[in-house]
Image (cartoon, rainbow, N blue to C red):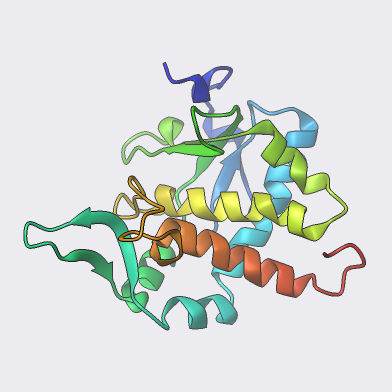
Length: 199
């Protein structure tokens, strides 16, 4: 078993709670978290989903093509997806998932997606990243926004992969998972720019 899932408790349907009243938003299971962690995840997920369905988000996503993954075709073509197609995939009902407070190997977070059984839709997040939500400085607090948005793209579609990311040929900014995480964080910070502690 991956270290990311140590302490993970399989949810029942009753463990999954809507993040807000938008029927397209996910329900999140926090049955493996303490109350402080659960509050942070629920609040940040609410903000992420609100941004996903905002006009600012749509405008940015559809404005250019994205790399769905770092894979290349036999002919060396990039795995490009139009902004409109990316946006349409993101606008589907976001699948429900549970969160585990555990640092994955060499990562901040890790996602496991299953089309058949919601029990295996799960995201492991480094505990210190969850705790960042309680920072008085918004640029630290927003790190959890970025992480949830990033991992949610993996939950939404198997097309959005990032193995091999961070190279000249596959920069993070062009990838759906990293690019959407960064975009949602940027919009969130703009929404909170008048806060006293934003740095």
